[in-house]
Structures are given as structure tokens and as C-alpha cells.
Length: 388
Image (cartoon, rainbow, N blue to C red; front, top):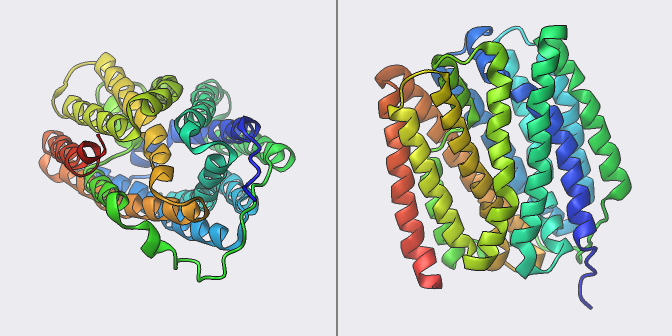
């Protein structure tokens, strides 16, 4: 008997959960990198370590929760627990007095994201037919990013009225709405419980083209950075502190606009080819960061380019996974994917932050661009070309 699929109602419901959660998160993240550097005394190298450790924690817990959700044959309890942890963590930024305090809160928030993400992605992929995965993840990404657009806008409005720390506290309100939507509207998709140990399925998952994909992504993320570096560079190019959330909002607008089109493009021409395209866009963005100088308008241009990369990459990199693994092991597969990405991203962001502090921005982001191009070539040679 096949798995009963709730269809796009689940995809949309999970999209609205992410919409309200991202509204909550992005109220904070639009100002947090500048706040860490200018108010709490973090260097760029420290910023890289903070973001790298946060993402590694995120991805380690994606691995664990994905495998355990495969074992028990349920996804929704893990999704709810993860969103709850993040909802409680984010307001704690309001009491941070040093970058070390902020690191602890940031890691706690990302642990919550890690607990929920692999089971949530598995639940999305199980809610629809495999051939519709690109479209489904595109819809989810678009709703997710609409919240990411409204969050920085709310922060921009609220900061002059109540201050940064009160915005951190206010972020709990949309997070609470997300929990209510999840509890009421998202439907579980059960699979038979597995008798094996939680990570026993790794050997069936990490092989063949999926292994080649993971190697290419690991290499790519050794040169990766996140929005924090883009916002710090925009600040250097003349963007005012209070305007940083607006730059972040524009970044997220581009990200949002790319969600559904990149998912549909992936379903039409191939997810691997579209993933390769995202790596090329990242390389171009890195060269802009390295060599563009001038006023605040250039900072906005870089943010828009980075948003375009992220919109394509975040949609397609997740949608490519179901093609290579059986349905009952998708939580494990997503966990392996996220663990590889997280470990390499910690290393990559730490390297880029240290290079920026010690050798300058040109060296740091030229390194990123070169590694992205090498990764794209490897992905083409080992996965894309052999799939054509």
C-alpha cells in the first residue's frame, strides 16, 4: 500500500509556518551582523566563526533529526520541536552583553532550525509526487522568503521607535503564530518505523552520484559566506546602520522572486544544471564583493546579486536530493547533505573572515569566486554531464 499524500495543502501550510518564522528571524538578522561588529565588538574573523558555528550546529542537528525521523516514521513532532526551540531562543538576543552571549543564542536558534529542517523537507517531498519536487520546494521557498522580506521592513520601522533590543523581544510574536499554524494545519505523512539503528541507512545513501554531489557541495561551501558579510560590506560602502534592514529586505526580495522560477526551471532543464547556474551566480557576486568600490548603491547591487544566488541555490539544492535516494531514507539523506554543507561552511566562513581581516577583502572574495568555479566544473563533470 502506497503512502497517502496530502498534496500541496501541506506544502502551502508549511510555507506559511516558514513565512511567520522567517518574519520573526529576519527582524533580527537584518541588524544583527552590524550590531555584533559595531556594538558588541566582534571582528570579521569572529563574525565568520559565529556564523560558521551556528550553521554547523544547524546542520549537525539536521543530520540527527532526519535520521531519527526516518527511524520512527514520523516528521511533524520534530518539525514542531525545532520551531519551538528557535521561537524561545531569538528574544534572548535582547539580554546579550557580549559577542559570546550572542554566539550562544545564535547557536541555540540554529539548533532549533536544525531539528526541524530535515524532517520538514522530507515531509514536503512526501506530500507530493517526486517529479513535482522542484515546484513544491519553490512554493515553500517563496512563502518562506516573503516573511524574510517583511521581517527587515518591520525592524526598520520599529528600531527608531523602540530600539534594537525591544525588536529582539517583539520577534516572539510572529514565531508564536507559526507554531499555531503548524499545530493546526500541517498533516503528518507516516512511513513504517525502521528497525535499524538511526544512521544505518547512510551506507545506502552516500554513494554514486549522490556522493559526487556532496563532494562538489562541500568544495563549494569551503568558499561560501552568508548575508552577514554582504551587510558588513554594504555598511563599509556607506549604508547607514538604521538602513541595514532595508538592504537585507532587498536581498530577500530578490531571493523571493527567484524561488518559484528556479524551481520550475529545475523541473524543466534539470535540477543539477540549475544548481550549477547558482554556483556561477555566486562566483559573480564574490567578484563584485572583491572589486566593486564606491557608494551605497554598489552595496545594494551586491545584495541583490547575492539574493539571486541564494534564491536559486536554496530552492534547487534541496530539490535535487529526492532523485538519488529511496523515500524511506530521505530524512537520512537530507541529514547527510546538511552535515556536509555545515561542516564545510564553518571552515569556509572562518577562512573568509580571517582572510578579510588579515589580507583584505579582495583576497577573501577572490578565493570564494575561484572555489565556486572549481566546484561548478566538478559538478558538471561528475553529475551534470553523466546525467545528460
